[in-house]
Image (tube, rainbow, N blue to C red):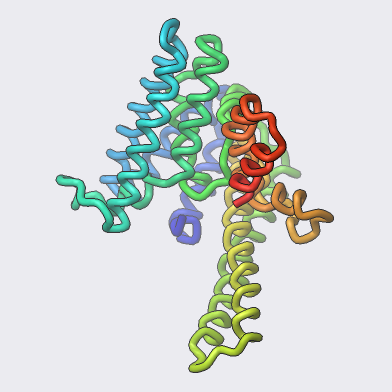
Length: 308
């Protein structure tokens, strides 16, 4: 999100880290203070976003608890909750693009664009999978569930957190060593360098070439490769910032780009490019459907869809 490059937002997140360090002897500090920080950050960013986020997270938590505790009709409830979330997010995204008219939502278009993100939907679905397969034993407190959905560093642009990993981190006391602090700050600086310096410079070059009156074949090939590299530095820069802040807040944010251009094979390349998204599709789609469709053609077709 754009707020990751806002100086006030960066100062606020470092202030949160300072508060965590000063209260490190309080065992629940990174759970309670994180909730306070998440909702306050959203309130300051947009009051409408705050109201929408609280309502959205609360509704999904109730659905998550209901699925955890359900004894009969669990599969039907599981499918219905996923379908409902997909339908809602799809409708909101269509509304944000001007393709769908939803009465009464004209005043909250900025909220829809921000929170109606596919990344939030993927996190909700991951929690529903956890509830469906683990059951009541896997029921997590509302505090941790809301923090999971509204975790500011990964709010809408990833990396995609796994519900079980986030809940496990939440149960551990806040512990950030001097080495962790140094590593986290360096990672944030690297991400800011990519976003502010590299991406800005590469965008200027891209626009300059694109503005030429006549594009030759070489120009078109250059733009294609250049844009692909630009997208890489843009997304990986954001991931660096999110991973760094996550570490400093006491949570492990998974790597999203694992040096994909150095991968020895095309398969490994796809695994290393936006790795958390690939892992999500593998865990929630490929592993489920591969049990039913065991033919090589079906597996190859499903793998191709996931890679795309």
